[in-house]
Amino acid sequence: MTTQMKDIYEIGEAPPLGHVPKHMYAQTIRRERFGEPKDAFQIEQVDVPPLKPDEVLVYVMAAGVNFNNVWAALGSPLDVVQLHERDDPPASFHIGGSDASGIVYAVGSEARNVKVGDHVVIHCGVWERNDPLVLAGGDPCLSASMRIWGYETNWGSFAQFCKAQDHQCLPKAPHLTWEASAASILVGATAYRMLTGWPEHAVRPGDVVLIWGGSGGLGSIAIQLVKHFGGVPVAVVSSDERGEYCKKLGAKGYINRRSFDHWGMMPHWKDTEAYNRWSQSVRAFGRALWEAIGERKNPRIVFEHPGEDTIPTSIFVCDTGGMVVICAGTSGYTATVDLRYLWMRQKRFQGSHFANDQQSAAYNELLTKGAVDPCLGQVFSFQEVGQAHQLMHENRASGGNMVCMVGAPRQGLTGLP
Image (cartoon, rainbow, N blue to C red; front, side, top):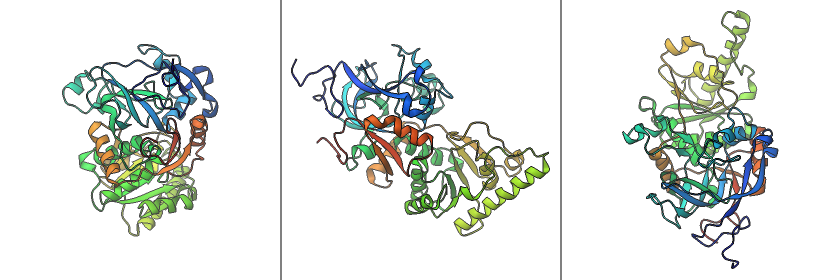
């Protein structure tokens, strides 16, 4: 065996193009380690996975960090290892990571979208190509087989090699570094669908859009997309410093949520005293929104993802005939709603889950043209995958999107060294 053809390579040591070693290093989660992300993730040596006909193997240069693998580490609300124990072949561990940039090293016999050597980013929408809805030309995001790659599926980007379906691969923007390329496809495509995927409520020029968590990964992209489409983004943040960051991205203004204390489930309407206190605070929030905009104008779209803590406020401040669109529940899943504001003001409460191929490609095209910045935030080493998720879990991450380096030998590279 020569030094060029080994069974396993060190982190940052790329195998010769097209050579797939037998083993690789991966950051794995096992059931017995469920808990704090800093402890749940550990580096192990595992076999490089085999490919199905429509799959590709990508040598990972960098991997984005998203909240879904905080959930994976906690083992709640979904035991992802239990899912993978039913895979073919089964696995007793989870390799997460739902954003990646890298180089194609192998393709399945029926893969048509990419070839060995292509520089790609990977979107996280997975579905069965023989799903009846997909075959009929329907939106794959609405199919029963739709899954999130690197969360509901195994072999994600926190490893030297990941495997994905060929349709998930998109061309890497040539001007972006590996780490910047890996930063934002999940949040960017998610935001793109939320803002454009519901025709009656696609963002229009002049529309006010309230964006929760404006300085975070999802919010930072949403601000830019709203601005790109001619809307008026207003951010909700946890500090004035983060608010100023949002204004630099294009937000008209911001609201510091720490100025209010009405978060969580709203009081029952029969508890008159408590409900009135809540009502006073949420109306004060609405006035702060008008102040941030500079006029008495309510948001036609409210861009939601905290869920439990914020839904009552979002429903209240949304304009008559407007839409609250939600893609997650990072503060919890049990939300309360004053239904009067939905039916009497004819507001829409819309769920949205990632994006389809066309929406992912449209967002990637904006990245490639430089119309949107991926908002690269903190960059971590491969050894720090657990720590990165711990910071996200504790809401201590800085603004923008977090990324872990994997195969790229250093930051700042747009291609091969």
